[in-house]
Image 1 (cartoon, one colour):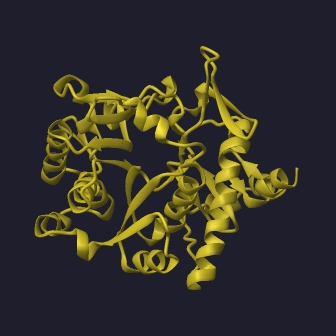
Image 2: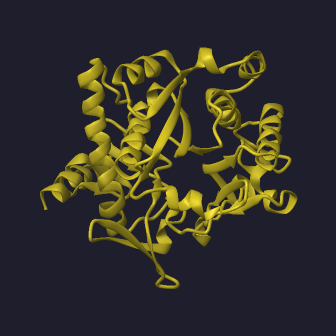
Length: 333
């Protein structure tokens, strides 16, 4: 059985639950440990009675050391600080032989077992950003992404995990300083200093806004198949990381504003996400009566231009701002 853990609060509830539903669809033998970072998130998840999830409250998880650090970090920084601690908590509390941390804003398109199997005898697995050259942020944000990381419960795996936890407890901030950034830059030299670490090779693990320009995707026999444009190598998409996916008012979505996306990426990758996210939101409203939709980005600049407003509401998008009606057209077709 595959063991996963993740963390999120009520602001990310619909995304976290959407990620869970995609695991449920594609991964047949797994369990997900969800760390609910506020009471609303915990209560709603608990009431959903998710068959393959254990919901953990902050009261259960936080120890005195974490509570002391919490006072000195922003909410984002605290979440990053807690990442290695959540993995360690799951391994120790539930006697797991391994645990894979996954970000809440992932969507699975096929079974992630192939990724975990790839690490073989190694004790830790990390995934590279694989930046498209024009978006390379390695110097500031790191070579590797804290999005899908596996640790085995053995001496080598626990040594690396405790090293990372201690480093994050000492320093974990949303700024670049002394070659550190959040919880992520710590991973940069793991392949050199630890001989038990495997770097994920499967191209279907870790597709994201900063590298998707390197691929073409299309559905084949019910599978989302990617092709690396530089080599024509084909692969099954395992998961996509929807980083910097934001909402505004009037059913407008900002899709990773810093990056360029082809039309086929919007339709192959983002359309399924918005469709499943909308279904999840309806599920949450039905169960709790609470509307899990928060305006995350302000676009007053849009209304100042008749042309841009026209494009969004009649064409369906302006640059990386998409109106829900754009995806309705895709669904109808």
